[in-house]
Image (cartoon, rainbow, N blue to C red; front, side, top):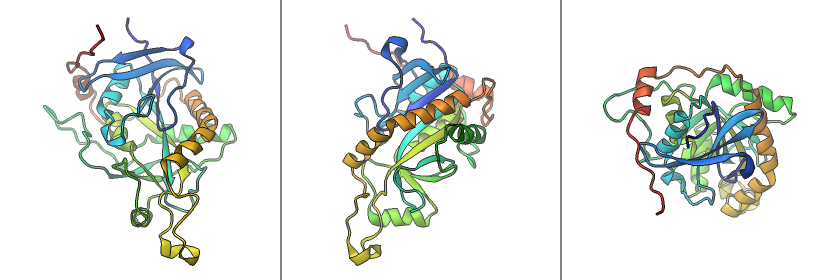
Length: 287
């Protein structure tokens, strides 16, 4: 039975593992050239929406082991043109304290060894990435959040680190000095991969913590501890508390994306079609 198509999708980050009532949605494992990807389709914000969770429904996939190419190829194969992603981030700037929603518009890649292009054989395509997130979707999201009365930073630069280790204090200060506002482990290579297959992305990040916080010498009295220093327990506790707010914001953005939205043409359509025509890897089923 073929999976329904959708033109909009949500990629859920840490803490966001489901969006739909199971009785009113369908979940399929999609075969891709890079391995299987599980996608659920349901209704959100008045739109038929595809949903996948980066880390799996049990948060079992580490950031550097996520099959980003399979996820993005699967969404493109369903006809998706616009992706709204959520992400948990640490704040490395005092202007982005815990509890802040951020519409990210730039990234700095500090990952390594990740498969980060579809054009690694047969055709070399150089992606223009000055504005990695779609400016049109970004503007839509700014207006959507304003319409529901939710305050969000309408710009932000995220440093994407390899993970799953969190940052040292020295690294946090380095990221801030480099002009970053937040730190995350998963937005690269997800965002450029989507652009390579002709999909626009907009990201909604929630600041859960102050990353490694200030260096000890910068603290009053030299105290190296802080209630906002990052830990897995702190991140998941704050995400659970903020989940209704995050879902409400995502729903508002999805509802506001125009039906006739057309992403930027950054890669020739023929090249994209060639990638989507690649032979898929069969999905194994239990006998």
